[in-house]
Amino acid sequence: MVNEQRAHLCLQCRNLIWTSSRAFHQCLELQMENTWILTFHLLLLLLHPNAAKGAIGVGVGVGGRGGIGVGIGIGGSVNTPGPSGSNLKSAFTALQAWKSAMTDDPLKILDTWVGPNVCSYRGVFCANSQDDNGIVTTAATESSIVAGIDLNHANLQGTLVKDLSLLSDITLFHLNSNRFSGSLPDTFRDLTSLQELDLSNNQLSGPFPMVTLSMPSLIYLDLRFNNFSGQLPDQLFNKKLDAIFLNNNNFGGEIPDSLGNSPASVINLANNKLSGSIPFSFGFMGSGLKEILFLNNQLTGCIPQGVGIFTEMQVFDVSFNSLMGHLPDTMSCLQDIEVLNLAHNKLSGELSDVVCSLRSLLNLTVAYNFFSGLSQECSRLFSVGFDFSDNCIPGRDMQRPQPDCSIIPGGSLNCLRIPTPKPLVCAALAATLSKHTNSRSFSP
Figure 1: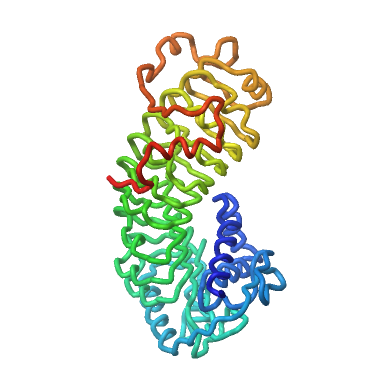
Figure 2 (figure 1 turned 90 degrees about the vertical axis):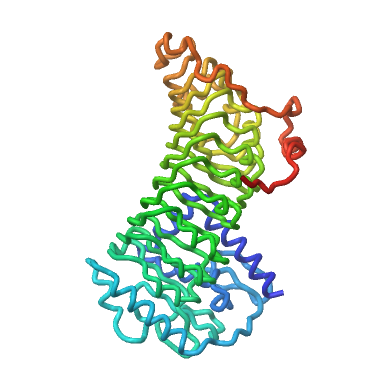
């Protein structure tokens, strides 16, 4: 019963924290202010199985002897045998080896990494597995474990050493905004408890780090703003990740067809060198997708008809690509969409109420395309500041010169469209599309 409650709690927590990448990273930014310890404490308690016996959270109660204070409570307790002091000895070995691989520490963080009490090291967080309150502690005991490392914005320079795999109990590993270079050691596959890996805004390079896909507990992967290159592996979207941030690297090649297997709620592939079409399997991903960003790549072809399946999606950004053809009528089902950016493509046809009547729309950008007409509802949006510039709309200001509109790019392009009910009933859309696939498992 306790395990079921914990699973339900973690799901609620992820929904609260990762509902959108914007909200999640606002949460992470709190760590750099006075509330950063509380934020880390919260994540640690919710994610670490040994520490999360008590009651701290974000305002949701879960039955039993539920939470108090800022809290989510987990009813009952879990009897987990505490580890011996050898856990901290291994952590000491790992952290000292890593310290030796650091070449610059302008904030003098490593000055605190002295002596065997690793729980007192700045940026290192321990949990007492036998503490009924699940308290994060700086006092080492026989049952202490290193459960998290948060060195975000530490400006450290160095490499990631293989000895870090000795931190076998670690659940959170946050290294955002440092100067780490090189690649990830293969030994990282031994981080079997790791659920969050944030290596964003560093100088890491090489092909996609396959070792991350061997971490059995990983659900949050953030590799953005590095120098990774090469193709994305098919296995990436087969893994049960809830958040995938790969933007601002040098990944190239086509997006794997396995995209349709991903259960993620947030996927950011922006600012890479990806080419080819958005996979047809995109329309068969889990319906819980909240945000997906393909912007500033080299994508061609059509916007898949299956985009309308994501009735809970809030952000869809395919700007700065070379997509062509008409918008699928299934886009009218995106009733929760807030940000829809189609700018700087080669899309054509009429902008209809399919797009302009979306009830939650806050930001619509269709500039620098070849749209040739507006519905009445779109005309209303035109007058309230949404960006329709540099298209081929007759009688409107700030449009392309007429010679540019004489030949529509992709005019002969045949976008595969499966017949849908007219008028389109969004509830029936998923059933209609699902009849045209034998399985939600897509392989190359």
